Image 1 (tube, rainbow, N blue to C red):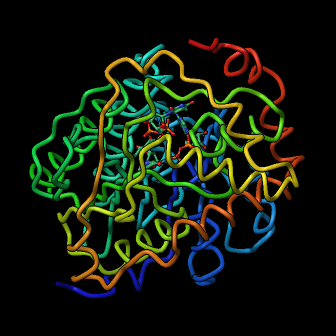
Image 2: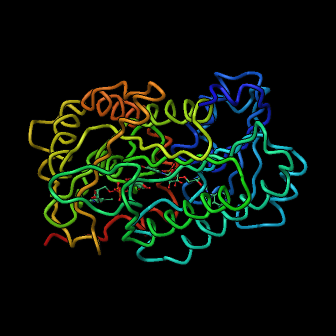
Length: 357
Ligand code: NAD
Ligand code: DAU
């Protein structure tokens, strides 16, 4: 395996850098690699927020470009102009519930958007030496597990929601461009992330937001579905390693080895919130409300991440309980961030839509 392949790269495109994971990746690269120019391309959907990057936006090696990856010709123009040498592609529609109510947006952004970037890279990279197209993907492409077992890099794809099917499709296109056109690519499939700057439509920030505001905590079905949680900065560290050290054409699973039943996770969050808000023990648990299940709800995700641990020396750095407490502290200390992202259409979309069963 060729080590530190990226060392000569100078101009790196990060798509979706104004979103949750993307903002952590942009911050890490801007701070750690002053010799790189980091171009953050994002069209600022409801999930994109430049406030996520306030602390680094004036750094000389950072530039923001507002653009839509579904605009194919524009992508070619930008690749020509900037001569990107590396691409870390995160821009996507990312929320499973939204994919159930509006699948076409996911097809458009996640599939067409990805193929536009692949085309632009292919046309610009006459000499693929030293270049890399890195697609950030999800463990949901592997489908759903029963009570035992893990997802491996070799597990057959079996996506079951419009979101995961669109991500599986984009993974297939990335591999097809590698096979057909020799485009230098790498893919990673990660489990559920949590941490600062996550939009409060996802389970953890939604629960924190609702508890803070004395609103019901919607638990889908019986709360028995299981997810494997990873602190977002650990994902960003894995992305950094893969970007620089991975072998071309490889796939890496990334996960926390940290499985939680939704209801147990929510109860733990309730305890942390009672303590942080100085409320009597049990106050937050009273907000738990079992609601109609998500359509096609995958039962269990669990990642085997031995490959990245053994080959690239990555491992999660935080105990889940500590990461969760750190996350709660961040949301409580950043009320204006939360107020900003929950203004406008948010209330219409997410709040007051659940009734107790
Ligand atoms: P997010 O929804 O927080 O951010 C997505 C970003 O993409 C936003 O900034 C948005 O404005 C931008 N975007 C959307 N459509 C765009 C378009 N057409 N053109 C340009 N920019 C566009 O998502 P996230 O949770 O940070 O996830 C980032 C990536 O990581 C996604 O590809 C997702 O599939 C993948 N992923 C997420 C998780 C997770 O737990 N959140 C886990 C594994 C993989
Ligand atoms: O596994 C990686 C994936 O994790 C990423 O690819 C996705 O982008 C990301 O959104 C996430 O998908 P999930 O559907 O697992 O995450 P979400 O936070 O939406 O839900 C986590 C679990 O909690 C899931 O079993 C559904 C449940 N849930 C979710 C919400 C929002 C509830 O019970 N109540 C809720 O209100």
